[in-house]
Image (cartoon, rainbow, N blue to C red; front, side, top):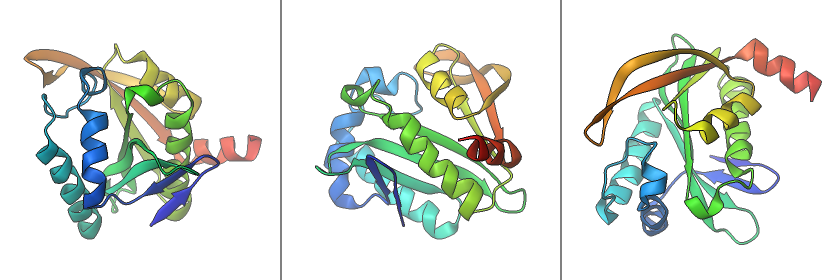
Length: 182
């Protein structure tokens, strides 16, 4: 499965992607907002690829690597996790290597995955979670139409510290309305 946007190709990860995933994710600036292990090791990237393939087969996840069209450079990852077909919902997550920040790639990749979620998979809801301090990721979600729905206090232990998690949600009818406006 492939999703093409104006500047990007979102495709299923494969084992040859593991070295690039490792290079991009082995950066404290990237992993400080994520549940990735630190330090990030080459075998963690291989495990990410295998987990992505396994979740796709089970129908509970749709993970993609983000590749720039033209030169094929790997920029990061985006995906739908914890897919619940009965409830027609999933969680979205994304990350980029730090050299690719502030270029609109996260918003563009998120838009492609939301199209998959709402148009192709017929989901009713997509949600996301962020640390409150991760303002850049929150801004990406706001631009995509997500609403801040609440905050779980001291919900996640990350790097030996408890963190709050902000809960974001986007409903299909809200996404449909934005598509008609745009």
